[in-house]
Image 1 (cartoon, rainbow, N blue to C red):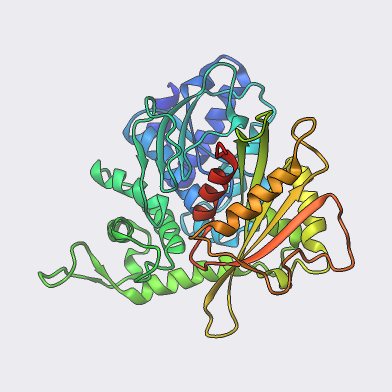
Image 2 (tube, rainbow, N blue to C red):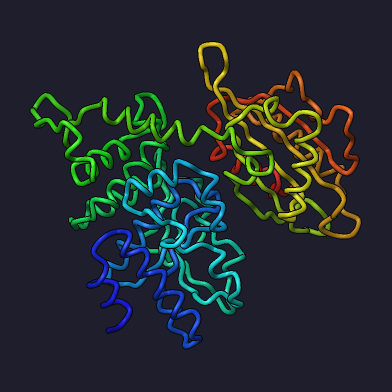
Length: 429
């Protein structure tokens, strides 16, 4: 039996499918016969949030089971990093994936392969292939499903190439599934619904959810493992299209997931920095040498004064920057204020000057460009941080770092900040 027939006919549940595809992919990668090149590797972004995980799992299922193209979902994190996000573990358990560290394929499972054993990739929840997955020869991005800013890449190779706004990338995957009129496993519907709810604050009116998210949730709920727990009502002419379900259940599930997501009390500064992290590479056309630099953005659901004071921002930030080889680190905090529980956001930026990307690199020019570009942006709406304008170091001094902290527009997420940073770094003048 070949790979495709085995995957298509054998696994009967989502967990079985994941275990089987992982085992067979690694077997093909190990034997060196070139069979791994028949596979499409489906990846979310390196932040490893539930949206990326659910979208990559669902798209690999769709390509394998419906399009008859053997595909495997790859999580771009270390196996042990799965513990950093309790909401992921909970949602996977709800979807019957009870042993995710054994059943899922992690980047650490393939780091020993040089070059990378596959050359076909499908990108979900991001739309630029990381250089870490570039094998010998030209990699082929065969599909993209995303809701971030379009970087205008792979326009001739990706099919589908869906890059359009939504609260959750999973909603676009659901739109594809619904258009194919396929019967999806209840566990997969549960996983996708969980991702949509956690990304849209439970489809809260006036929040991140838009029509595609609401339609996706309508499609998923009656197909999920939650069906028996939900009061499904008949649709009437006066009601919206699609199934009408008990909003109390949706709110309860959303609160359950959000509570687990927001409980990071057991995490120290390093874990907070790496828990929800994305990395970018920029070529600087405004610099004479046109060097390439690396920047990282960490989203932290805790305000600075609760974890970063007395120099922890600088010392822990520098250690993380050295580990990742960064020149710039942005730390984006998001939390609820003590008064009326309103959402608030801060930004802390660190420039590390001890490892220049090229001889004679002008860090003064980089610093001026970054600070002035961020402060001038009309969407970020930055204001000098009252307590930590120039960092939290206090008596601790880290001379090779340059630090600025701001209060920002509470609605401007990393999805907004990343394109701003890219524009600042890649501007011609």
